[in-house]
Image (cartoon, rainbow, N blue to C red; front, side):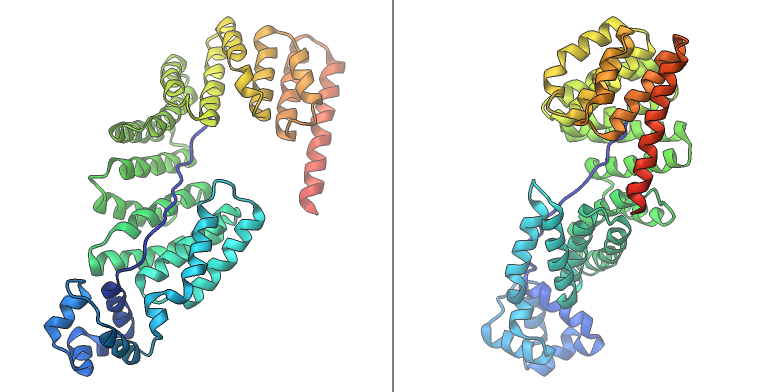
Length: 392
């Protein structure tokens, strides 16, 4: 059975100019308090305070004086000097087609932006985008460190300006990076922040319990993991999003299956398939898990019908097609379909190995030691090749 990774992406707009100036002043220290800086600028303190709050416009003359006082170029204050780089980076990160080449370019851009970033918000955004590029390049440890750095700035923004937007997104990134790395040592701080700041946000709380579910699963505490899976489902149900609900139902079914509650898993997967039918990949994932349940319940005729009903869609996804063919061999007690998968080089090596293991079980049950050893040798040979390739 499978659990679903919840991911997040974000495009955050430009920082309001008054807020931007406030952040740059904070980074400069106590000498740049509103009172102290206003006096040096020769402006009324209350007027300056309202300007920083965005309640009064920033005049060209005042901005020029602020630029000189902060010793920061006006284009840097306005982020004009990085606009084109940011635009390209966001375009690369948000595209539906991410290649290694484009993500390496995104990583380069994000690294350059991190070097010139100033102020809590810009630093947070730049570190978060660097983490996203690293994540898409599967550099999960580096991505996690970038997200942790972004988190430090997101917390400062929330504390200083009461703006939780950055915190919302960065905590989402962190929960994903914690779970994919299966490293939960410091996750409590992140979860506590989310539960405190976003207690009224059902989607966010759903992510929290999804993460707690993965944490307990990692520790082998499946009963507690199942509890969090159900709580996550309750929260996602409040979002009215069929996609979120369907994925949460997959997770619930996963733990019901692990604990031998096959009928309950079947019920949840039936609902999940209906909710996910517009998303091919996740729908097929639900179908695959549904077939495993049917096989555990010895409903082989029903399993055969489901496989045939979904074969056209599965043909567009070779690994799913391979899984379904292997299952068809089992429910039909006919090895020919699994044999076809084991010999199909268009299938991934992982799927071909599953086919071979299935055939080993089949021929063991038939007392055919010669055929069993043939597929055993095929799996062993494949493993050696995988090790050789990874070593070089």
